[in-house]
Length: 397
Image (cartoon, helix red, strand yellow):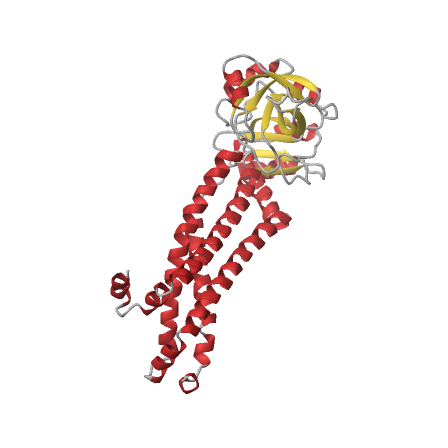
């Protein structure tokens, strides 16, 4: 390692030699940096997982334009709007077809828990759709939704959070298993996959009539979402402008699908306290790393103060000596980042398989965290050198 660094720096790698001279201290420094890297990766991973799952359902809609209540912020927490607004929108030039949906979170007894008392209850997101209208791009829904015309039947999301393997296998085997949803018995005829989110353990798709039966407070004239598709070649943005003019009112909002996705995501980024919590976690991870590296490098500088003083007496500038500390910072950056990244990848995989949440590690996040780690170590090194920069060689001796 010393020879490699000597070739890279063109001089004796004093930074490496000083770190390697105290293996225990070096190991502590690497552990501190790795912990900071791990903390930052996990906070960013959970935060982006929250953002991604919030718009996961949006991306499954087969729509160009959506109609929602003006206060809508999340697809699983939508208010209602008058259906007459949807009917008005259907008459706008450029609209090919569309339909309304009912969306709500319902209580249910989780399959496989019925033998334990009354069964374990949870929350499931239900999508009530018209069975003869293709509402989702999700594979399998279009082929299966025809069987939902029988009231009391449903499709189950195989990405729901929990151990539902036996339940899913029973559905796929055609056994038509049942469970209780909103106090009523529901028969499951097929499966699809969207996945769980922070706000929902999973989802089911039912017909609009089944949804109204499961949620008595829902009304056919007050849907939660309107989905519109434009004619081939039409610009969704331009058609959306025409729809806004046609259905102008305080009781409905017209958005393109991409605008709906952006607005829902931005709500979490800018207004939700959750985003601030995760951001604070990232900052604290970096602060912890800076404190640890400062302590290690400051101790190292203090231990080698006579040697540094000798260098200064020989004419070496503070900038030259700072290069040694920066060399140590670069070594700690790489030595701490690699294990931090590897452990993070392992924990990401545990989250994906353990709680069925779509946490990913995009390359830009790796580069960003590496840059943050390097900045953290360089800043710590600069702070650690402040005492040496003010020191007089004569005072040291």
